Amino acid sequence: MRTKIIRREEDLDQALAVLREDGLAAVPTETVYGLAAPVGPAVRAVYEVKGRPESKPLSVLVGGPEGLGLYGKDVPPAAYALAESFWPGPLTIVVTAGPDIPADVRAGLDTVGLRCPAHPMTLSLVRRLARPLVCPSANPSGCPSPKTAEEVLAYFDGKIGAVVDGGPCGVGRESTIVDLTVTPYRILRQGALPAEDIQRVLAGSLKTVGVTGGTGAGKTTALDSLRDMGALVIDADKVYHELCGSCRPMLEEIAARFPGTVREGVLERKTLGAVVFSDPQALMDLSAITDKYVIGAIDRMLAVHAAAGGRYAAIDAINLIGTSLEGKLTALVGVLAPEETRARRLVAREGVTMDYAMKRIRAQKPDSYYIERCDHIIHNDGSREQFRRVCDQLFHHILED
Image (cartoon, rainbow, N blue to C red; front, side, top):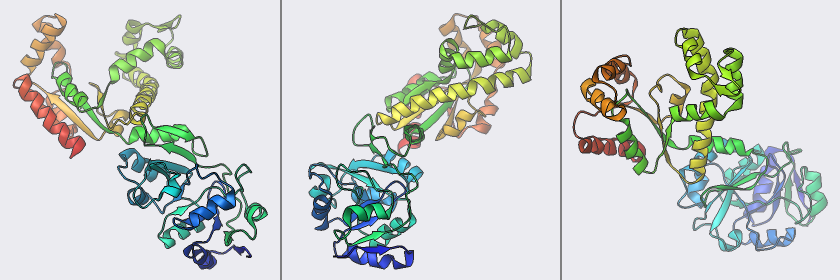
């Protein structure tokens, strides 16, 4: 048998003919060349030609994110988020296999690795064939993965039906493999796609509610509702204060911009406050320094939560509106309560006088500020039980409906 060499996209019908007859064809991807065969009788030939142990499962090429639903089952939302971000591209996503993936592809496991190739000729083949293709690297087991059609022919000339010559592979490394069937999710093989990019998208796959409002409005009860739904609750102000005591790069930037506010690695809060609260530009400069570190820390917390299988998160901050954190939110919820009710809570919680509590509350943003800028408003003007029921109903609507 002679191996056909296909160099033009208009000649891809020849490769399709080989695959439709359950033959083997080497195809280019953005990483390395793969050995493709349609799911079915040809799978055994892939194992034989490569000398691959049948205990090792085979990855499957699909035409796009819809392949997750076609060939996987119980697919988590994080898988679709990764597929939308990185497919076509060098990422293999392991999910629970659907009924159309036979045992010989899975090597007896209940999972399958799905990938959407970025090379235009191979992607065209997959979409035109309309069948899943197994596609391990086109090399004998234990040998280097081929990056050119010539290297494929050196391995398999006369042993496979065709090789699609798409030129040298640009990346030259296998795809990154991430397993989404376990918690926490884990990277099984670090390949061409960096782990940091995967973590960033996983964090973005969460449905995240922002909760804001003035002191004493009742944000704690609202956050308890979200926490009971499985949300990771992040107190942005607490994150900032922790960074003030532990983040050396942030403190060094503050010290450079505001000399004398950091002494022996310790932030002098009162000294810094005296500078920034009397100078709007200084306050903006401080925010520009601290925001990137706070957001970086929150991103890491969200990524860890998402990798552990989390679906929901909440961010609590009085000053949330207009910050870059707002861009991470599925919805922004404002919690409002009458001034006197807020003041009584503040007195009970902090032991301050009623007069001080009222002055502090009136120095904060008015209700109209939140009403104009939030997606949803919750009025906390009844019993705690009534307020909790309202919170449960709203958050269920935002996160699950």
